[in-house]
Amino acid sequence: MKALVDRLSDELSVRYVTYLETLVVDLWSEHGFIEFRCGFSLRSDHVLESLTVKLPAAAGTSDREREVLIRAVFEELEEQIDLAIARDKVAAN
Image 1 (cartoon, rainbow, N blue to C red):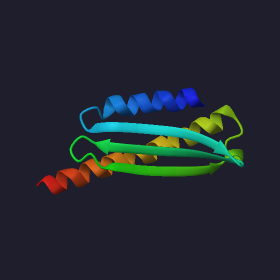
Image 2: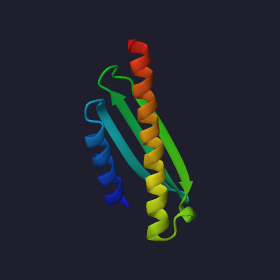
Image 3: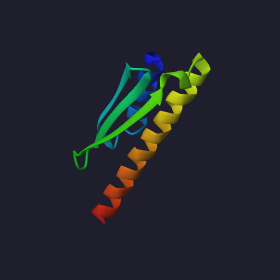
Image 4: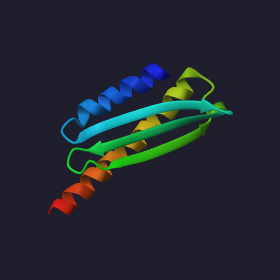
């Protein structure tokens, strides 16, 4: 699971290298939950944006289910990055 998170983090960093100053995705597991703590900042404003997604550990019992959940979290993170970039472009105009 950690390897997939690291790989998807690297892919996002490469895809948004022009815009991102920082990208961090931490994976936590406690009390029957898996928690993704994500943060990023744009080069243009240096403001740390954060996103936390908490899922029941039982939601992903097989490797395939866990992969689907992780990919969904990264899709949400990518959407948040896109929104921040769009906000920044609007503010610049």
